[in-house]
Image 1: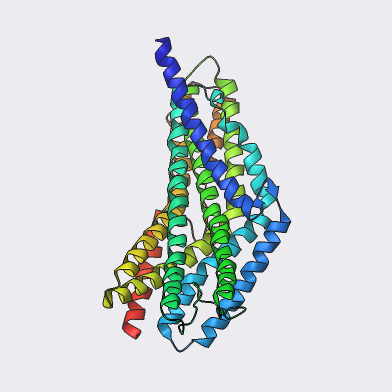
Image 2: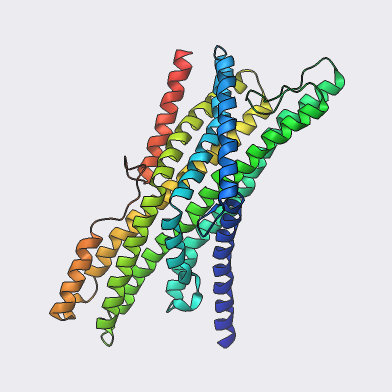
Amino acid sequence: MISTTNRKRALFVTEFSNTVKAMTISKRLLGVSGTWPLEIRDSLFVSFIIYGCLFNILALLDLITYIKNFRYVMANIMENMAVVMTMTKILMLRIKYRSLSRFLIETKTDYIPDNYKNDEERLIFVKYNKLSYRFVIILFPWSTFLIVFYYIKAVVPNILMVMTNSTSEYKLPYKIKPLLKPYDAKSYAFGCIHQFLRIIMILSGYCGTDCFWACIGFHLVGQLAILKCKVKNDLNNADSRRKEIRKIIFGHYRLIRLADMLEDSFSIIIGQHLFGTTIQLCISSYQMLSSLAVVERGGILTFIMYECLLLSTLFAYCYVGECIIEESTSLCDELYFCDWYELSKIDIKSISICMMRARKPLKLTCAKFCILSVHTFTDIVNKSMAYLSFLRTAL
């Protein structure tokens, strides 16, 4: 019996450590751009912003130069949309770092296994935070592979072509107007290093923000589910109802405050992510269909993997929003089905006030325009396909 208990405890400790690992990966990614909320480094942040602005200006100049080439314009927008979105994300993280710091500080004690009374609460914690861990360990390698593969796929063939034919021109991997047009191996290497910084920027700012969102979003969902579990178990215990009611009310108020912090900090990030993903899905689908027309297998495979990555990240954002709505509203039902009729009038009044607040779901919005939910995911996909249909018809 003791050994079984020890094994269970060891398993819980392992699962809890995995949730800390997911947060650690997010911390290290955001630390590269200096935007980890608890450790802001303005020197790194300003450097990334300046580089991003310079990159976008050069991309715009390149787009204007080839404005008559529609396929080139589409490729330019698809490549550089990620840089624009990355800049928006790290800028908002820097602006909202105080709110996010408070969120991290207030939830720090939630990662201690001994703070949970029973195995049911620990299992709920593990269930939701395991989702964030799986998301992070899949998203980061997947994103790294795709970005690096796209970079290498553009650099290596160009080097081989120049080595075969000395009259061929050096072409940089990304579609921007080069600061210095490469004319030899040395200048080409300088241009490639300059553009390689884009990979670091996107992995840190874009991928790091998505990992951070998954960690804190699923953590909030898990705490709402644990509060619901406490209502079911503690309010039916006649010996300590008054004390437990106070804990539940204060716990509910704390989670409402945490949800407000998350909404305030990520509302604009969510909005621009959904808008940018709509455009990226549309253009990448168009590029994939163009590759199909010329039987370009490498391009087809790359775009399929890229679209799967976009859809997975988009669904993670929307699924967190849906879970927050579901868990916050189901708390009202759990309060109703407890033995409230055996409570004193004061306690019944407290429970009623808590139920009235729970009837209003906690929610996250897309820049205050619409509520983040699974329906938002289907709307984004439908709109992307509608824009794709328009592009194919018009062109």
